[in-house]
Amino acid sequence: MADITRRIGLSLGADICWPLCYEEIVRRLDLALAIGGDTVRFAVERVTIEPFRLRQPCPYHVVLDRLTHWYYPSREWIKKAVLMDDLYVFNNPWSIQSMEKQTTYCAMMRLGLPVPDTWMVPPKAYEPSADLEPTLQRYARLFDIGVVGRELGYPLFMKPYDGGAWVGVQKIDGDEQLRSRYEESAKRLMHLQEAVAPFDLFVRGIGIGPQVRLVRYDAEAPLHARYEVARGFVDAEEAALLTDMTLTINTFFGWDFNSCEALRSDGVFHPIDFANACPDSQVTSLHYHFPWLIRSLLRWSLFCAATRRPMRRCLDWAPYYEIADRDLPYREKLAAYAAIARERLDADRFEEFCARHLSALDEVLWEFFGSDLARDAVRAKVTALFPAHEIDRFTEYFWDKIQQWRADESASPGS
Image (tube, rainbow, N blue to C red; front, side):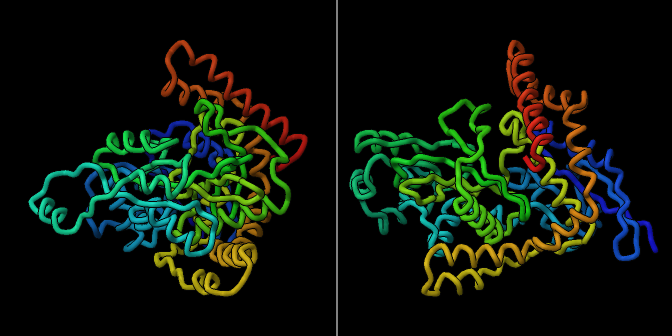
């Protein structure tokens, strides 16, 4: 019998609201779990940025990371800790570093998912280097980007082959506009992607471990209103398909936390953007859905820490490819991929853990999101993003959405 503390680190950038909520709910839960004859407790700390010795032990068992995709010192510290200290991190840092949109499109096309037809085009301009001119003179071929556009068909979308947050994404309606936008793209390496048009539904599947939430999404709405509060927009089979799609993508790339965007056209869901391994986590984006995010992050991180879930360092794509090469209908393949995903995510063991050890979480979560501390967290994020004259208005807007969630949760737990 031992009293053990599992330490969870939060590797943060500009994040404000979700860490405040996460930390306070862990404090209120005050867990002491009986596991394997030991009493397991939890401590949460924010990861600092400072010089580190490569052999320096890592004090954390699990890290929730929001920096790896852009802040390299933290990324390299996390990689060292995974290699040397058996750290479990959301998400696999090598996968985040290498799996840009280009790679994810290719991989999911290989698995048979209905990704829209996509081209990569060389950049319009280059950073000068000694070898550039002879390389281009010898091997670069002149091309007419309008020919590519016409082959794909208009409208199409031009977007960077990597990155996120809708940066650089543009709808193109014809040759002249395509040529103009290509000229403006300068040194960025771009994709041209067939538009899914017309479509009648845009869904984001947010995956955290084996948990998936499907949200109707409006990309043309203001940032604070893109995630809609809606129910019944997909039937049971569509929900199962989108869940399987999200879990397949996440486990293929070793991501515990990711989102998948899909458009429905003629009854088919086309995944269009799913390399989002640092997805929206702020109340100013998620509003009504924010408590679900906090609940899911808590459940999955506490499970991983308490059970010392091992980090999967090797992505191991062979089982997916074996299914892809079978002569099976698409839906059967997707279900088989998702079965691998659920096994890799210990989905059954996770649900058993939550039922046994985290039964108090929902009540604590519901009470917290009615508290002054929760409201202060919302206001702190709004203050960081909105002009002074809009702070009160948008604090009320997001707070009202959360209270709507609390009302719905009271009427129908699991909202």
